[in-house]
Length: 138
Image (cartoon, rainbow, N blue to C red; front, side):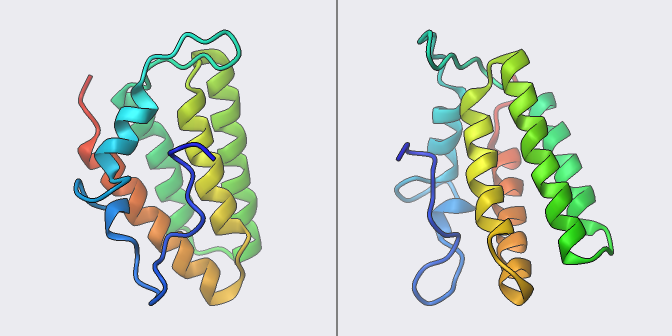
């Protein structure tokens, strides 16, 4: 398990984990950003810095999915396509750690149904929003 993977957005009481939306605590958003941006030229796992514009495009696409008034099943299809777009982007731009971040979070959301789906989707929105807010401008 890499340091960017999570198993849940919530603690045992059902509250969103504070480190997912703040800059304090172990595994907080700023630490996640550092890990995503770490330039790693390993031949098997090349990672280049994702810039703020690239991140905002993914976030904007996610917000469109989040805000549309469509059924859960269709939202899941669109989220899975967002994951596929991150995969494609990683191959072109070598942003593998961001791809892994998106993949992990979307898998957590789409594995749920009903109210659990909506709760996880909202938690991912808050987490993604915090990531964009703290992300360096260049």
